[in-house]
Image 1: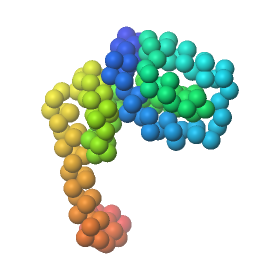
Image 2: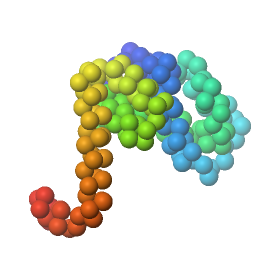
Image 3: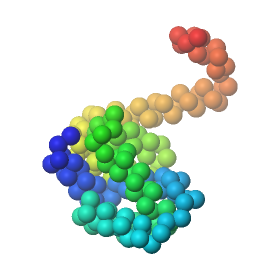
Image 4: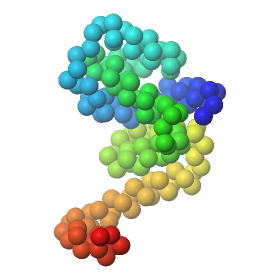
Length: 157
């Protein structure tokens, strides 16, 4: 991924507040690891530098968890050194957000997917796949379909 595309994606992240999509993950990330004041201040400076600003909701996040949560966002969502492209990440996140549902995430993931080059058809298919998966999961679980039999019939061992 080019530096220009990374910068553009990060800027889009600020505009669309894509960090909202992973705010829940922030709480899990390092809730048990206390942060020092200098870690928190350094994190805010890094967010400012990376995103061009610090969204209000970031300042509402617990200080002890922010350094780890931001590190997770940078390592997975904002990194160009992951197996998934920014478009794929946005489409996956949108599909999950549609199922949660989270209006903040749906909005920001749709914006990020478009910014990463996703077409309307790709966005629609991602959401439809989430719905299809949810539909069949409801059927399999509700009908208590035998898992071992399912795997056998579907080509597993």
